[in-house]
Length: 231
Image 1 (tube, rainbow, N blue to C red):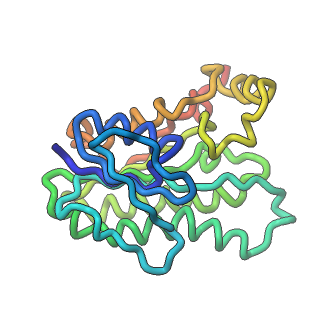
Image 2: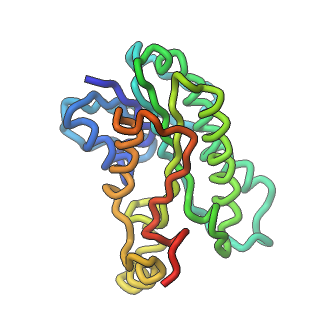
């Protein structure tokens, strides 16, 4: 049985991934606003605020086979209305939190046989969308961090990143709050549907597992074809 640490495991993609991994392995998950409702005995929940200056991970086992950082935000505003502080705060959540958790978990990851880290970006980094300057800046940094850490941690720890398009998660609730919004967003994708948390969780589970043992430093576009197909 392997040990996985899912930061932000109680909703959306983190929840779907935790449930998938916990069928065979042990999941140590964290929550902030939404306490875990899972009754799976292989999932243990711990409160954690990734914005805290000091991160406490003493609840983790000595050996950690994988780390997944799920916290994020989608703040869509015209660039002219944003302040420098908005970018700094977004960076602290989406990038600074990931950095602190990776640093805190490195000793545990190094003790595993085939450890892996999975981070999350967004299709907006590659495509360029109106009002996405905040999230694109932070997630662009995550893509750069992924490749830099993959090089630095090789050959011991694999590091990969998933860049989804919009998915049915609480994070995207305001963008998918009506049937009309759901249909309009679905039609923007070549596959004519909105992604599910399970769609993205399946890729994350693959990147954590032994099946992807020769994969590192990659950005995977799980986006309904949006970033590469025109029809």
